[in-house]
Image (cartoon, rainbow, N blue to C red; front, side):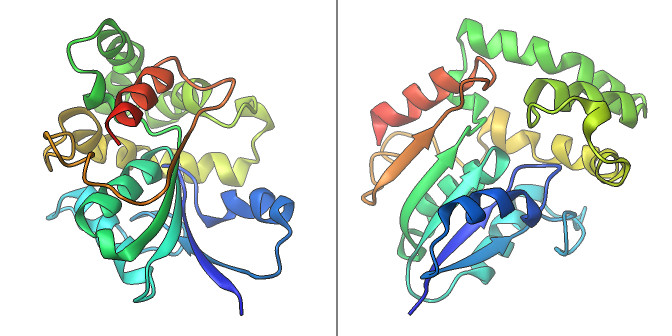
Amino acid sequence: MARPIALLHAALADGRSWNGFLDALGMEDVEPILVELPGHGSADDWDQSRDYADQALEILVESLPREPVPIIGHSFGAVIALRCAIEKPGRVSSLVAIEPPFYAALEGSFMHQKTASDLASVKKKVDEGSLASATREFVGMWGTGQDWDDISERDRKQMVGRMDLVMAGGDLLWKDPKGLLRAGRLEQIDIPVTLVEGDKSHGSITPIIDAIGRRI
C-alpha cells in the first residue's frame, strides 16, 4: 500500500515544483499529497479578511489524512509545516523543513538586520505597485537558480500575480505572532525533524536552521 507524504511548496510556486523531486524519488509506494498555499495553483484565493498563514495552515490540515503522515515543506511552506508540527502534533509523523525563512528566530542579530535590508527594496517596489520588478528581484534573491529570462512567460506572469501573497505571509516569518518560538514549544516536538539548506541558500538560512535545530 502506498504511503502518503504531504508536500507543501514555497511562495510563488505550486504543486508542480515537486515534480523533479518525485521523479528522482522513484518510489512506487509513495502517495504524494500536493498541498498548495492560498492563491497558488488550484487552492482557494486568499481570504483577505483572515490571516494568510492561518488560511495556509487550515488548507494543509484539511488535506491530511486522519493518521499522522510525513510532511515536507519548502521555504514559506516549511514554516507552515513547522507550525503544523507544533500546533497539530497528532497529524505529523515526521518533518522535513527545506530552507525555512523563519526570520524571527534571528531577532536582534546582525543577520536579522541584513536580511531585512536585503528585502527592503522588494517591499518598497510592492508598496509602489511595481510587482514585476519586485518579483524579478525577489526571485533573483530567493529563487530556483534560474535566470529570470529563462523562466517561461507563463510562470513569470503567475509569479508576478502572487507577489502580494509573499508580503501577506511576512507577519508569521518576521513577528512570530503565533508564538512558535516561545519557550518550550520547539522543545515539545517529538517526531524526527530534518532541516535542509542548499549550497545557494540565502545567508540567513544557516543561522535560522542552527537556531531552530538547537532547540528541537
